[in-house]
Length: 417
Ligand SMILES: Cc1ncc(COP(=O)(O)O)c(C=O)c1O
Image (tube, rainbow, N blue to C red; front, side, top):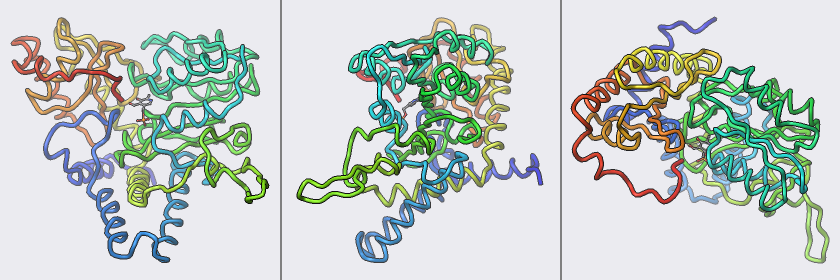
């Protein structure tokens, strides 16, 4: 039976009521880190409590932790349309991306294709492949208004038989646009059958419905702490079963050995995706991660995606009308996501973000690369949140930003996540 609007409205109201952050402020920054709900936090504290009372390595708890990692792998696999033995447990998206870029075979002159709308976590590993292995790096320019077809054509000009890696975001952190991943995968596999298509899913996991097997993608990295609203320090990497042996683990421990002895006998583990995992993973994080994936699946990936994009349409209608505002995220349905980006004439984006916090307790971020303010519109947000942003931006444009905004700007040494 299809989910009705009433069902989903009740679900969003429940989620909102169960998320303490949302009682305190207007939170529009899931693309950075999502606010955790009480049920997820309770799953984590319940596990910690068991460790305190039962002993972290008592026989029952050890067995339970082994089962927990498997349950986490299975839940992530379900969410991603994959199998549990194609899922590695990671620390975050960047960790998963690096497992692939450091573990694949790249020789001088091999092509690496990425885009001009990537996060540092995609572009920097690409540059390192150029620096360390002499790869030929192609950065495809993408406009925020480009249609899926235009994007595929642009990638078509960069991908050829020498391409060994295509590394792109599923949704750009800066423009907010959704990339036609399945079409780019098909293109890459047609032109360069040996190539690996690796997706930076920092902005897609927990945001748009994903199906690894249907898309044919080779590898896909997601975090738990952004649109999933789970704990920081946990993520997942999908690698298509038949590509696992093409990747060598760059960092290795016991899981990377099929067998070894102390007389020189050693057989690497090539087959299992767990070769990428090192040693102890926090049971608290895994318990939180499992509850996070369950919460997301209970909400319904399609429902979350529909709601986020509906809120984006509302934001466009409400905010585009403000004199002095220019929308910079996509305004067409084919590439629209829950990320909404805009500029306010004469006000630097970082200053506007500081103003929104001081003026109306609104949490969002600016994106330096595109000089935009970015709102992450999640299913738990609502039209009132967007109206509050609009009113505060109007105040900034008519009466000036909050007097303490400039002084509150952080001194930035490294790129923001
Ligand atoms: C597109 C993209 N990739 C990677 C990252 C880094 O994610 P993580 O902290 O999970 O490594 C971010 C963070 O905002 C991002 O937006």
